[in-house]
Image (cartoon, rainbow, N blue to C red; front, top):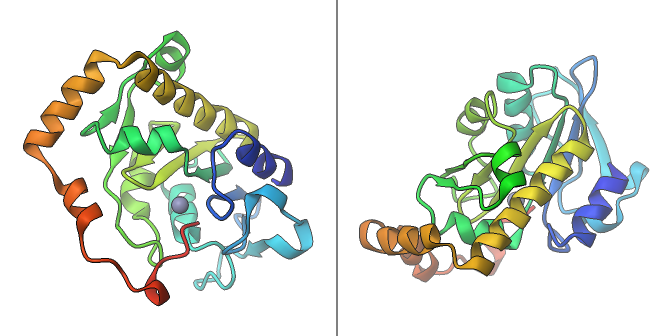
Length: 214
Ligand SMILES: [Zn+2]
């Protein structure tokens, strides 16, 4: 977990505060990063915590703990690692495409296909919706929450890292090539749904009530 967290920073997949990582133990307890911890420099004793299967309160676990647990309950199927990141190009693409990010090159097509986009619950104090994300990850490997970030589910964290980085590279290619599909999606989205823009222009949340953005 420490190594993968550091690599997410080195690859530009997270800010200094964003992202969280978990691993499902054989007894169904979950090892997860604590809330507010930078993945850049995790320390096992200080920055990771174990949440027992029977515990209902997340304690000092990541604010996205309930999403992690919901994903494991709904869709683990032997996959016991989750990585959540805030990759810039992927987040940008999620605000342009309506329901899915298309593959932009052969590796993206073969491994990812179209990556589904779900709406954000819009408050990281609550965390994202585990039901919706868990249902999609029954079939998919990685998902994008619009305007927020990615959740990848795999057998190992290294695979989660690969999927997240591959999706980010895929989105970079979309922007670099000015993919016609991107332009079509941009035009269509601006016509049928300017909700994201309205959201970004909405009244600001007072600083004291802003989410932690893990
Ligand atoms: Zn996040």
